Image: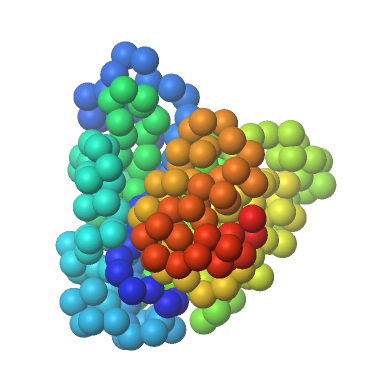
Length: 248
């Protein structure tokens, strides 16, 4: 996974109120799985040792660095809280947080997976294809399917047709994710909301842009435009290049 700066957000959790929330909480939910950058255990282009320590979320490129999940969302005016351990999903998760804006409450549950367990993090993402309560699910990090095979879940034909009528969406912010994830997600009947066409930096500004588009009820094409605009801005590249990356 090519990346110059830092990371992204992730999520999961129950809808039970474990953090003070506004009375006008909406039913939408974002769940994001972040597989922490790991120089030793993933096929990424090596980064600075502190950024590429997959067991250290505080400094990790995809979580705690400048453009990682926690710092970026805080700078953008979101509230970032530690979620109760009572609602931790099972697995090698090093940190679990909730992110939201009080004036427009959409809970974002982000989980930071130990980088040595990227296959399990990917399986977590796959498993969420089977769960009906997630409105938007995003995988962030190195593209694990470049390193190893993780099978997509199989659905009966009638369930695939049911899924096509639903509103659940899935995004993978990782290198070349369209090539590796699009067919598998589409075969379940769910919408591949935003995927990538080439190598890229899976950083939090892209994730935040996608979530904004989704919260506004925008279609996939618009979400890709939001992602491309954010990527061009922070990476300081021509918008046409960013448009190609996200398939605009």
